[in-house]
Image (cartoon, rainbow, N blue to C red; front, side):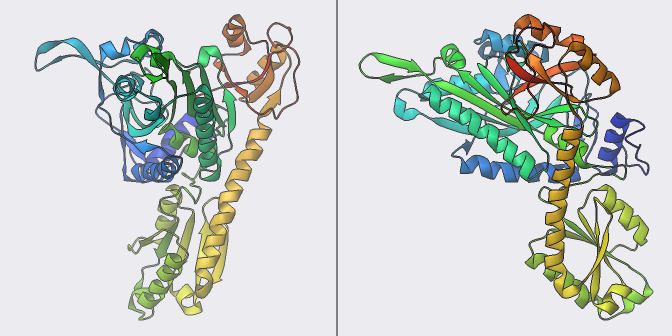
Length: 481
């Protein structure tokens, strides 16, 4: 992806628009390794914001970070049959080292349950060894056939939390606590409204008893699974021998969880807020919240007041704890505007002779392009207020879109008609059988059953849209990335 001047309008070709925004904002580019992306400095800064903010929450909830090897012996993966069946098509396997064939091939980690849990088994002997609550920030590999930057790549980055507990009650509480942490982060920091739900048996994580997901809607009405939290029960504990002793001659297998969020959350961020001008970043996640655009011309450069004025601007922003960058290049103001606009910087601050003479600063909001002029002495408080309002406005706009693009349908015919019209979150009734889950494809090309919402927000549909039988669950159908 090379930097370009034109961004394809969303209404013209949404997928091309998405790639153009990534390129224009210099977030990522293609590498020489098929299916792998280079995360550029702007993209890295954004991911670092995600890791810094969410890592603090992980630690605040009692978890500690670890680092496990990226190579996993195939024999470990084969200990949990269901796990292997779930990931075998995505394995990237190394069969030889230094020209010698390996008796036990090594797999680039698609996820770390197996190598971690073999280690857990060595550490857990008594109830006092529990709980284990760890998290790992790392890269993983999945042999994806179709790739899309941030959303689905051969190699990507994530955090994966893994815990082991002495009781089912404690483990299930962990699953729901972390699910809520994801929601708080997505909504409070990234301004993306979420629907929390339980996955159906066919959509569960391989080896899990229950999988819960954070479902988000993109601007085109498609769904994106933005995070997951899994209750693993005792499945892996039995496979790896993770058990603790209690009483005389008594033992119990541990109850486990895992939960994760990857760089696809950046894809969700891009597609939730950006426009035809480029990237739009909510202020709380933006690595840089303001760009000071100094108009460099003969008058400004020769004016002895300039440096003092700039120092005051920076001091105002520092005191308000607003991150910023100073653009003092000799480019025309229009080019500076365009450059920082497509990079999604929430606020652009214009400083030229007009501002210096009037002792004021012009503020331009990225999302609305609204311009306001404020006295220099009020800049910090005014900019902070605009950032807060922008954060709230972006979330409100995303909420309105989620509501506008949601439908309630009772029959298969109604659902088909809805998806022929466009992309929606369709709320409907479902009888909950495996056969019915297979039949979801009848709802339309690419339509999947996203989740069973934990909180129902749509009118109740009392019959299954496929069979007409009494509905066991209220579900959401959508096309998804």
